[in-house]
Length: 169
View 1: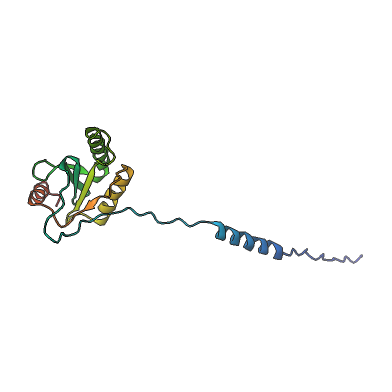
View 2: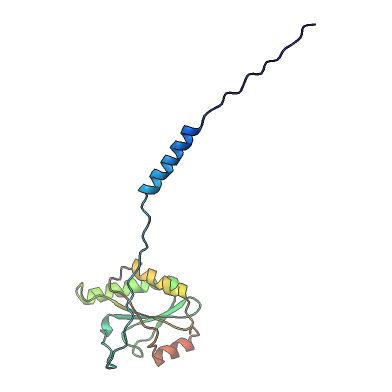
């Protein structure tokens, strides 16, 4: 019988050194040319305590006060506390009211850029941080140009009474 010989051919070897070098060059290139996103912050104006006890008046006809309550509820009113009955809404619905009041103030002031809607946000003890961030986002979306005043120290008795009556404090 004839003897069969099997000869093994060596598997070809592929040198991947150049491919690895190219991969690292590409990674380095994209890392160096990519710009990292910069955080975007919104200005917040919290009123200072006046030295003489006199608080600068805010024009009531252009002022919308938003009270942040518990269970994602907000109460808002135009004008002065006690003279206007607050409206209660879910925080998800407040944008419509902000836009409506912004447009109404602009219409009443002949679209004067210096007389825009002024927002006062008053977080109460029942509010959470997420609601505060949500209301800041809503103001940004509604294109409120004036920085909102954040006043958690001067919640009036009328505001507290209203919030307690409607169980959102």
